[in-house]
Image (tube, rainbow, N blue to C red):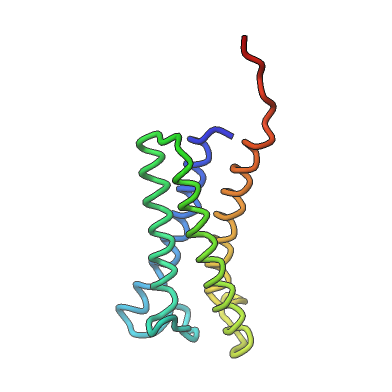
Length: 142
């Protein structure tokens, strides 16, 4: 897979996650209640959606900057993998806690579960791209 293609898709995934977590964060910050009238899980004393927003925004800015500047180095993938792993761990933990503690979500699942989908998507995309280069056939040069 070409790096530019990877970065384009990574920018879209992280941008979608940023928009989703941004909406949740905005609703919480402006109204004092969580979006969709759901319980609001907290992480380190703050709504978990704020942390999700910060993680998604980090991946989005890394991917967008690397895409715009046509970066061929491995650091954007490493950064995205680290952010996606941290986000997946956080969202998994929050989803598990919410599923045990509550029921009857308007969207069927807690919003953390939908954030988890974006984080897992970014992680799978990054890992798939990273491993595709390792197995690419080598061309002979003379």
